Amino acid sequence: GVGSSVAMPVKRSTAKNSFDLNDAEKLQRLEQQKTDKWHVFADGEVILKKGFVNKRKGLFARKRMLLLTTGPRLIYIDPVQMIKKGEIPWSPDLRAEYKNFKIFFVHTPNRTYYLDDPEGYAIHWSEAIENMRKLAYGDPSSTSAV
Ligand code: 4IP
Image (cartoon, rainbow, N blue to C red; front, side, top):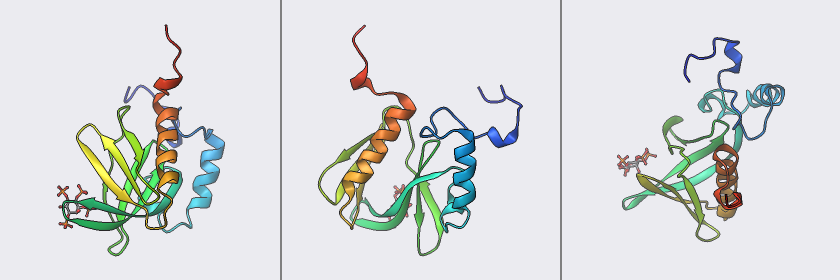
């Protein structure tokens, strides 16, 4: 648990669920990422996927930069004000659902996030999120009966 390790601070965010990046790969990716304008929002995590999405809440949709990072984390940023607006909370119950080319949902226990990718790559988002979930928490569908 927290505080159980007092080892090198650099290992803080290195978890077994870091999208299969080992420590060396992660450090290398972080080094390369420093020139990325979205790096400052990634909280020391490696950005695995990024892109503009429209996030609908109520009647309106807001254009946000969405980052899928190691951790795992899903961070969204207002690209005009350049401020982080929030995060989609991860848990083993999170599910990404592909609706059509543009629309995908992220279901969490307390909220469904309605997202659209104006470029039409919603399937890439839903697959990346589902792959991360399986990696981080395991894939129930691949568990053999016991
Ligand atoms: C806002 O609507 C934005 O959609 C917010 O998104 C959203 O917060 C607010 O929902 C919603 O009321 P207006 O901009 O039209 O006021 P964002 O934070 O990306 O700007 P989240 O972050 O939760 O989607 P509430 O219920 O969280 O306040």
